Length: 598
View 1: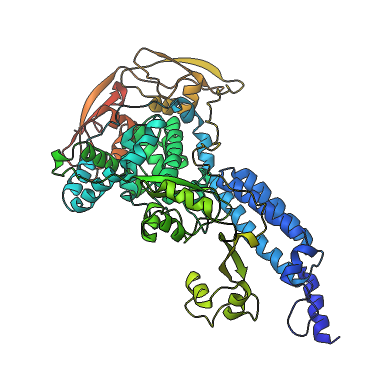
View 2 (view 1 turned 135 degrees about the horizontal axis):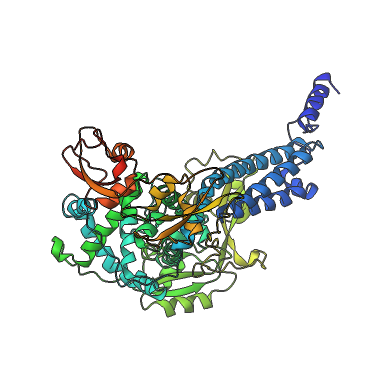
């Protein structure tokens, strides 16, 4: 053995991997032998899938624990000095597990804010209430979108109205079946323009614009063969389950729609941070979400009254079809032939079917032109198993050519090139894969058929409940009488406590109102006295000056932006101009020559 080889072996021992003894560059451990010689690898991959499932289910702590455990076991196995090829598999698995664990830790940190919002969730969580109509809120933001849709966006909105009439008969029955208002149809309108193949820059897909993780959470099947985010029926059921969950959390549709766009955890965080459940008063929303709800309101208003806004009511043939259940893989061209229509027509009716055939080992519902369902079912029943096809995923080995592969599977090479969209047949790489059609009878049977599950609501996290605040030892009870104009935020600030504590000590929910004369319990730290609250509160008018903001005014008069907005319902916090007059309630002992500069 040469000194060079000996040195390489010594170095590999320090890294945990033993280099294979080979002069030709081929490992003594081939890829085929890896799983036979090291069953740990299959176990590790299964554990990675478990960690991945926990992550997509929102169980971040379990994902982190599973990931940490897997990484530790991989490190322990690497230290035993496995062959280099096996070590490479372990390093790759460790890398993707580390990425998953770190992402779960990042998302967990953000979701912790939702735990702080437990009092919000308890008070606003309620059973789903079916509203006859969603109330359209008219303000300058809604008016902006009304003007836009009547102007620059008119052509697009007219197109959307046509699609509404085409797909209404599919979406509305599912909404009604699940006790949701039909108005939510217009959520899909502004999300995608009811385009089943719509894809956003963030890779949200389909008429309801699901991200892949959210889609899988709501039982949509997404893989190389099928993407149920593009299926109107499947994705509408998933959207219904998500919307019902959001409404149960937030109790009104403005916040539920904001949660649909930005994510419920972010909306919970903002509600808790800003202490308001009024969507229109929430600040620091993502820019897209700030536009999202008023855009929905405008689309809903025009959809209800198209003629009022100069739109014609389109005469469109509703989308109609028969549905055929398929449990084995079948070419869509065969289905088209049996349905006496074109392959393109079948693809348009079934945008979720990503390839030229139904997926293997899956039960799917294929939509065919209305009236052709029986003919297709008859064709499926008459196909012999020898004539049925399934698709084999072939991994290209070193030295293989397309000619070798086509001869092995008995397929014309040009068809193999077309199926796999190969641009240069002479440049295929070892390790990549090809899809090859084979007879179903030649494939081992016994694989489980994956059933559709989109009609079933997932097991979502339980609604958080408010826990009663414990009174710290040594604190003494004080009773405070609410004065005109008082708010919980102002009282909490005076007593140097939190709004959550005030609510817990007094059993106040977010829907509870306080009024002058009511008594509140406040617990004071040892050695402190109740703050002076001054005499009677009086109303004053402040004239806005150049450079003033609601924040600066609230600080000047020892109040909050929320109180200023509550006392002045007609002002817009985003547009404050010099000369505007603002009503402020202050204690009489706060008035002084400086503060009276109005």
